[in-house]
Amino acid sequence: MQSSKPPGRSWVSRLDRYLVGHVSGLPGGNHDAFFRRLSASANQGKLWMGTAAALALFPGKTRRAAVHGLIAQGVASAVTNVVFKTLLPRTRPLPEHLPVFRFVHPQPTSSSMPSGHSASAVAFAVGAGLVRPALGIALAPAALGVAYSRVHTGAHWPSDVIFGSVLGAGAALVTRHWWPVRPPIPPTTRAVTSAPALPGGEGLSIVVNTLGGSFKEETAAALQEVFPKAHTNVVQPDEDLVQRINATADHPGTLALGVWGGDGTVGAAAAVAVERSIPLLVLPGGTLNHFARDAGTGSLKEAVAAAEKGDAALADVGVVTVERGLAGNPEVSRLIMLNTSSVGLYPNLVRRREHLQPALGKPLAGVVAMFRTFAAGTPTTLSVDGVRHKVWIAYLGRGRYYPRDHAPLIRPVMDDGVLDVRLITADESFARLRLLWSVLTGTVASSRITHLREATEVRIDAGGAPMALAVDGEALAGVRKVAYEVRPKALAYYSPRP
Image (cartoon, rainbow, N blue to C red):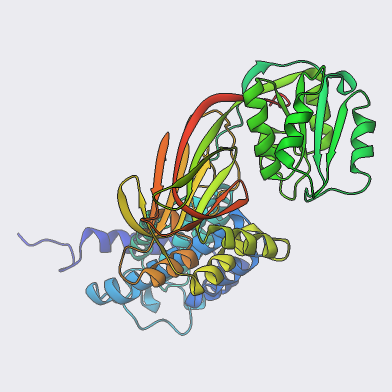
C-alpha cells in the first residue's frame, strides 16, 4: 500500500506549508506595507545598528547594553550566514504559496534555512536585555515583528524563522561568557554603633587642611557657622599635618574628631581617631571625597545631620606596613588605609580618567584612559604573596568595591573584613594587545590577564628594585616591600542611617 504523503516531504515541511497557508489567507491591508517596510529596515542589520547608535547616547547600562546587543548580533549573523546557510541549503517559498502582493521583491537568493534577519533581531534584543532587562523587553516586539515579517513577505518558511531565532538567542548567551553581565551592587549596609551626639558641634574638634581640594578662604568660617560650639584648627601648608591632627584630638573636652581635607588627610585623622578610640566625622573637604561618599557624608548637610543625632557606624581599616630605604637597613613605617592602595600604572589611569570624565562620562572616560595609559606604559615585576608576576596594575581596596572590573567606584559595605585584590598582569604572550582588546570590548574583568580575589593579608615584594606606591592618594617612592592586613571594625565614624 502506497503512502498518500508527497515524497520527500517531512513533517516540518508540512507544518511550514500549513502555517504559510494560514498567513496566505489573511485579508490584505495596510499591515502588508508595514511588514514589508519593517523587513526591509532590518536588511544588513541596519535597524539594529541605528537603534544601538541611539541607545549609545545614554551613558551607563544603556550604552553597554547597546554594545552587547551589537556584538551578539554580529556573532549571530556570522554563524547564520557563513555556517548554517551553507550546511542547510533550502528553497525559499514560491509565489504559489502567498499572494503576490505580499512577496518581498526581489526575493533573496541565498538558502532559506535559517533566517538571518530573525537571528540578528533576537540576538540584539536578548543581548541588550542581558545587560538591561527593561530594554530587552522594550525591544522584544520589534524583534518578533521582524521575525514574523519574514514569513509574511514570503522570504522564509516558519521553521527558518524559528531556527534563526534560536541561533540568535544562543549567540547572545554565548557572548555573555566573555562579556559578562556585571553583578548587581548590593544594598548599603552599616554596622551601627553608638557615638556622642554633637549638637552645634559641642565636643567636636575639627582639623582643616588648607591643602584640601575644596578649601577656600571662607571654609573655616563656614564650618564655625554650622558647628558654632566646635574647636577648629586650621593647618597651614608649612605646618606638620600629623602633629596638628594630634594636637586637635588632644584639645580638652574633645569627644569626636572632625576632619576637612583630601583622602590622605582623612587617613591621617583616622589613624589618630583609632589610636584614641574616638569617633571620626569626615567632612567633604577633598576633591573626590572617597571615604566621605562611601560613609554617607558626601555633603556637609549629611555630615551635620549625622553629628547632631549621634548616628555612627563601624568600619574596617587597612594597616599598611611599608619598607623603604637600603635593603640591609630598611626604614619601616605603618599607615592606616581607608580606601585604596596601588602599585604600577593605576595612579596614572585614575588621573587621566578623572580629567576626561566631565566631558566623556565615567565608562567612556575609563576606556580612553586605559588606552592612553597602557599604550605607553611598561609593566612592573612584582612578587605578590610569593607568586611572581609582570604587573600593569596591582590594586588593593579596603573593602569590596564595585563594579568588579578595572574601574572600581563605590563600596556599599564598610565592614566586610576583606581586602579587594585586583591584578592586571602582563604574564601572557601579546600582553599589551590582550589588554587593549579587553578594554575595547569591556571584558577586563573576565580576561585571563585579570586576577580578582579577596584576602585579609597581602604581601608585595619588588625584588630589590624600588617601586612607587600610592596609599589613599598619597604617593610613596623607593618602596621595596609592602604588607597589608585588615583590622575589623577598628574605626567608628559618623554616618546617617541608610
